[in-house]
Amino acid sequence: MTDATQTLQPKPWISGIAPYVPGKSAGADGRPLIKLSANENPLGTGDKARAAFRETLAAADALSRYPDPGSVMLREAIAAKFGLDPARIICGNGSDELLHLAAGSYAGAGDEILYVRYGFAVYEIAARRVGAVPVEADDSDYATDVDALLAAVTDRTRVVYLANPNNPTGTLATRDEVARLHAGLPKDVLFVIDQAYAEYLSDEEDDGGLELAKSAPNVFVTRTFSKIHGLAAERIGWGYASSDVISALHRIRLPFNVTRAGQAAAVAAVGDDEFVARSRAHNAKWRAWLAAELEALGNHGVRVVPSATNFLLVLFEGDVTAEMMNQRLMEAGYIVRWLPGQGLPHALRMTIGTEDETRGLAAAIRAALQG
Image (cartoon, rainbow, N blue to C red; front, side):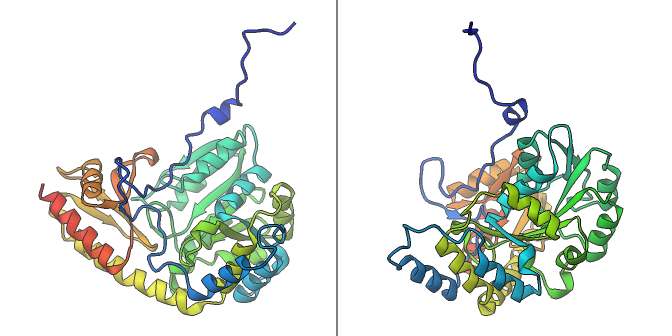
């Protein structure tokens, strides 16, 4: 006999997940705001990618035929660009899908997934989704502390995530630090290096993740087309690892996970060096400018965390709190990212926008600090 008092319940680890909250683009009253909350490319999308996207959509069967489930042309383009084996590349619905695949393939109930405090919000969700225990290691003034991560490894650790550069702090672990972290991990732990912002780095800043993944059997590097390539709407990510890791990820990857038009746009984007260089130069110029403008406000308790990305993490430790500043900026027409849910109630993450947007944001912050 059925117990009428019983109700359908999700697994307890699912109930414990706080859903991911994306950056807003409108105020509480629905008024459109200048969106500097999601780390999108202020220059938009390159001409080559847009042309390829339009051409693919114009085909008679653009909507009726499934995309290539293996993203073959895209994997080959990526492999040629970076000197990789295309068979060891996997494409995903954004790099987020790949981060989830890593947890789903190598961790389960009772296992531990490790990452640094103030790491990317998806790591905790990916861990809890498979019943694993999320473990945060202490940071070092908002940056990765390799010793703290290694000290937090236990015999239950199965996956270690490292966002490099890190979101939401913008900090960068050096090549030597990444190598030391990998060398200290057990061989049966998957080391995931999340390089969503790698294209904003100079050659000297490269953390060596891809080179490490070429030879190390337990390293998985992920990247995305959402940031510098300006393809955020199409959700395209890719990753590189050993054949064994890629085989495991494919077993649980959803088929047809990257659209036809998205694949075509991404192939074109891989070859658009001019757009990438222009985006990187714009970002470097206006990130440095905005950081200097805000650092000049230190007497108001404003502090800027050094960034290697297309955003700044700005701390408000004076009379005007981050929550107050967030509200005042919305009233002035700007939306940035307030991060109480990630343990940063005293901070705002600000995307580097166009010149006009960046100058306007700085002026709005100065005005808000003056009341």
